[in-house]
Length: 146
Ligand code: FES
Image (cartoon, rainbow, N blue to C red):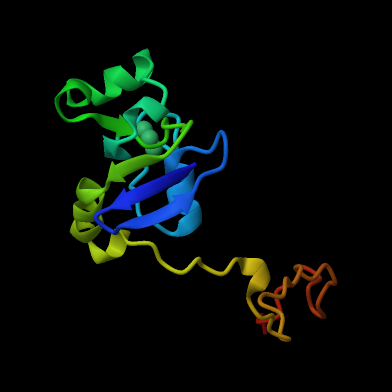
């Protein structure tokens, strides 16, 4: 089973039970996803342009998220598409989303965790407990008295 991504014109083998969104992530193809495939965000919409007979029709939840787009242009949620044969999907909407993202939202290199950061040999903070020893002259008398 192969999935062809347009307009990139790239084909990849899809594993049984793998969604098109998972395949795209595995192969480095951008498909926007906020919910990670719950489904709830409907950001992962793609158009099925060929092989629609090789995918299971959308369930009630998916239809309620896509709305009439399913009937108008065969949009589907890529996180819900499981293939039983070759399929071609059009990612034109996803490409536009990728380019519309502000630079701050684009994927970045993962931040280093605190564990990975080099350790300094100097202690960051040294706790000094208050002294309990009595200082000389703390006998309660007035030392300034003449
Ligand atoms: S990833 Fe959110 S609905 Fe598909």
